[in-house]
Amino acid sequence: MTDTSKTVFIYTMPGDWHAILAETALKARGHRVVRYFGSDFPETADIEFEYGRDGETLRLHTLDGSFALSDIDVVWNRRMIGPKVPPNVDPRDRDYVAQQIRFGDAALRSLLREAFWINTHDAARNADHKPKQLQLALRNGLRIPETLIANRPEAIRRFLDKNPDAIHKPLIGASWEENDKTLSTYTARVRLEDLPADALLRAAPGIFQAKVAKQYEVRAQFFGASYFALKIDSSRIEYGEMDWRLHQHGGMTDGSVALPEAVHTACLRQMRSLGLVAGAFDFIVTPDDEWIYLEVNEAGQFIFVEQWCPELTLFDAFCAFVESGDPNFVYARPASPQTLEALQEAADPDRVCAEDEARRAPPVDPTPVAEKATACAA
Picture: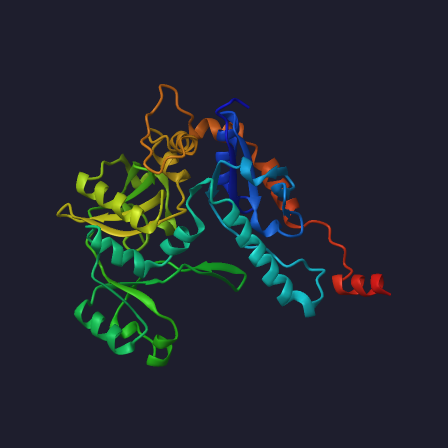
């Protein structure tokens, strides 16, 4: 590695193609990359924090190697998966072990705070709360739809009576298995006659918004102060009127689009308010050219943006952002940027995914820890 090379620590999960491509791109630029699965701890990842008169030695041991925490320059909080209690722990001890590894995992994050985070754990969790996002959006000069977040039946019915053409979103997305299928939550139309009994309305709060007329939609990925915005014509797909994510494809876009200066400035204020240095913004642009803010996803998908519009070299920008360590980063596109197409050719998805799958199911000693301890004591 060169004198300017960095050690980049990616919190992720097995099979995450964004993390795999980023690893490929960053290694090609001479950086060391560790893709760390939080669920590996404590079975196949060990912490070793030693303190004494001679100072401290803080190390993490993973399947990718052993390294000092002080060597980590950048942490990409891509998909932070929590630790997992090993299956060989006696059932009577599982609550205790779960608590200890949860705090061990939190200690690891705390000890990495001197690195440049994209984004910090606290900021990411804060951004997950849509009510807070909407409050800050208004304060930061972003236009939003008329919105009610509630589980109070009379308030919900009053809002739908006032806004008969409305939509519903969950406070946080969810997936579940039903009849051998994986189902997920999406934006859906809701009317007064669609509402269940009051007892069920109270059971789960939701987001109710007045439906906004669309000229087109925009996904704008920010790295620092730079953004890469894609124009999305959701009318070209089935169910696009409600949620373009359900049947998305490259034919939905007419290419890149520029954010109005006032919207760009407001987005930067929103990121600062949430403590974010990167994020994927979603907007509706109305027939009157008003930009209506929907949300910012702190760990949004961005592969599809470059797939649909290759002129937006997001992976090259992301690597430059990592190298800068600057929350106010401004991208200067080089003459020959790294491209997604080249990265996909260089990466070996079958091999990497097979390796990831193997890491998910390490061999386990079936003897419960409590039984081992009793045997040793005897």
